[in-house]
Structure formats: C-alpha cells, structure tokens
Amino acid sequence: MTDLPEPLMIARDADLAHWCAHWLERPFVAVDTEFERTETFFPIAGLIQVCDGERAFLIDPLAVSNWSPLVEVLRSPGVIKVLHSCSEDIEVFLKLCGAAPAPLFDTQLAAAYLDMGFSVGYSRLVKSLLDVELSNEETRSNWLQRPLSASQLSYAAADAVYLAELYRIMAPRIEAAGVTSWLLEDTAEQVAAAQRIQEPETAYLNVKQAWRLKPEELAVLKVLASWREREARERDQARNRMLRERTLCPLAQRQPDNLQALSRIEDMHPRTVRQHGNEILELIRQGRQVPAEAWPSRLPEPLPADANRLLKALRKVGQRHAERLGIAPEIVLRKKTLEALVRTGYPTGPYSLPDEFIGWRRQLMGEELLAIANAEEMQP
Image 1 (cartoon, rainbow, N blue to C red):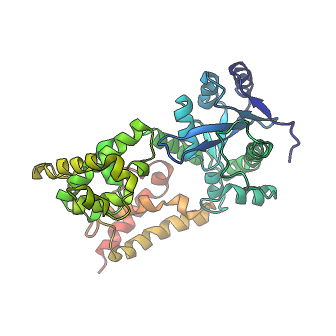
Image 2: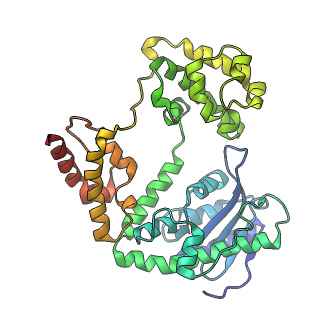
Image 3: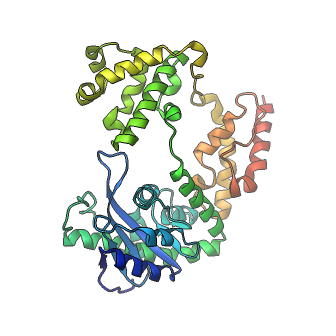
C-alpha cells in the first residue's frame, strides 16, 4: 500500500476548482460517495471521496455550490473514473451536478472479467487483493450530520484510497486479458441506463407479478403505477413511501371503493390511507373507466419449465466462452439477455437475437446461439 498524506477536506468552490484542474492531469481518479436515501426519491449526497493516487480528498456537498469543475472531470475522456458497484453513485452525481462519470472503470465488473466472482462486494475485493480487513462500523452512519466524526472521515477516505489501489492492480490485468474495451463498453451502457428516466406511463411494466393481471386489471394498475412514479419524483419521496409496490397488484385486482376496504389491502400502510386514500380510490375509478379497446395487453408470463432444456443448451454456450476467456459466466451471457432470446420464438421458433443483445457479446456468440436455438426446436 502506498503511504498517502492525510485526506484534504474540500468545502469551498475555489478549492474544488483548484483540485479539479489537478485531477484533469491525472490518468485516473478513484471516486466514492456517501449519501442518504431512506425517505426520498433522489439520493442526497453527504460526502464525495476522491483519490488521485497521490492523495485522498473529501468533498463536502453541503458546502460546495459550483460543481462545474467537477463536471469537467467526470466528463473528461482522458481521466478514467474508478468506482465500485456504482449504479447508485451515478444517480448521486446526476442529481448533484447533472453529469455521470465517463469513461468508467467499475472494479466489481472488473472482478467478474477476471473471474474473481460475480457481484463481488467491495470489502471482499479489498481483502482478496490488498489483504486489508475493512471496518463496517460507519456503513449506516448519518452522512448529512455536521460535523462528521473523525471515524466517518477516516472510513470514507480509506474507501477512496483502497479503490485507487485496486485499480492499479486490476487495470493491468484487464489490459493483459484483452478485455478493457469490453469492460468500458459495459460501463458506458451502465451510465446510459442510469440516465434513462422512467416514463410514468410505462411504470406498470416493472411491477412484480403484473403478468398475473387481466387486461382490465392492468388498466387500473397502469393508472396507479403512473401516479406513484410521477408523484414520487415530484415530491421527492421514495416510491414505497407513496404507495408500497406490494399493494399495487392487489389494488388492481380487488379495486376497493371505500377507505375501509382500502385499508384492508395486504401491506397497505395506514399512513398511505390517511394521506392519499381518497386520491387512490379516485385513481382506481379512473382505471375502471378505461374503455376495453385501451386496456393494456397481458404481460408475458415467466418462461415455463419446458423451456429449461433450451435455456440450458444456450447457457452452455456462454459457459464455454467464459471458461475459454477466463470471465465469470454471468457476465458473458446474462440471464435477462438469455431469457429475452428465448422469448423471441418460444415455443416453436424461429428465434432471433433480441435488441438488448448488443456489442461484443453479439459478435462473439450471437450466430452460435441462434443456430443452437433453432436446431433445438427441430429436435423431438
């Protein structure tokens, strides 16, 4: 481990601008965030940690107001941004300054590309590569309190320092394996996905168990889910604080028409009935009034057990390439992509490559998967 100076706290716009100019000259910066998101729709940044390989920095987002210098760093094509399992960190930056880190090197993804395991936790990765046991005592700290404790500051700075050390070890290995461009392709898609805003009118498509509903029930679900998404965003409240997801399908099926019946819905929070009960009842009425020709189509059911033979045959293709390349099989052929491919033609075929099957994976094994899928269906 490199001995670094004490972390520097940045709480003034001028200091941030000074150090951002310095970071623009560095080949990489390791970045982490601490935030709160228990009751709100958007994450609230409590601290931003940066390590440029020379020193750790702690940026106070409650004190800084001009984020344009950091935006320049986040967007600079010449500076690799190193993060770990960073989907929520990306959201923090998008909310804080309207920019996402790119190009992005995700050490969790890199671990999968190096066949160190799929979805490896940060502590485990630090232990594996740096032989350091991380403390977890500050994991659930209040990062919006001021002043932050010495323990919090030390914990936060260490995360960024170790992240920089991980990059110094992993980046050459990724390069030697010849998969740097693949990793950066995946992280670019990750950033693009984080910037896609959920359209309220399609929120119902993401509700678990919605496939069980009839079209007339889906009409009610669509109204409820759309309202929940829109209001949560506008009020900056967590979706489940507005209306728990587990209640959505029961509401669409049972369609209560009074507050007493509403309160009897399983998992319905009394606070929701008090604050939004009459509004929810009106939304249900609106959903019931949707004409039949405007009802949503039934959603695809989960693939049946009969599809397992085809799924297994296709999964073997991914496993074979994963073994040859030394990459975690879950990365080579993702479960969602595999199921999407099967859905294009099940049960009788013919099959086609789904839209989400893109980039290096499509080039590596797209035609092979299609050939096997269509050949499988020809077998008795």
